Image (cartoon, rainbow, N blue to C red):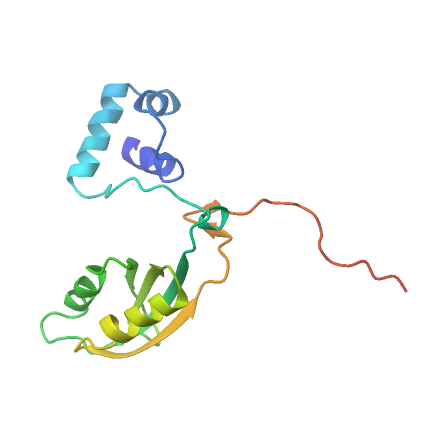
Length: 162
């Protein structure tokens, strides 16, 4: 199916041209362009963000994962709470979870203090939030299916001889 093949390719490299996609998929540029336009209009493709390894720049970015327990509102479930949360500029992602908590909120800030301020002044005070637990990302190795670090293939274990 052309749609699925296009999605698989652009999920790893959104810079692939329509002509290159057509050549890779034995299709025509017009067919690929039409398929892309349909997927954008139907909401399958929501955007084309770049994957940036911020550790290689001068920008200090702190990423945090926040577990959120929610008291769902009658007739609205978790959707309204999630919608309120993802409206904040700091929020990168919001996921409904199974297990011991309800939502995972991923945010980015310039410092741990900024992340802490977001949690304490914006997230925790929301009416339907029961509790939060914040975890800071120390290092990213792979994101969106792409490695962010070099694969050295070197065995880092020390050789111990008897």
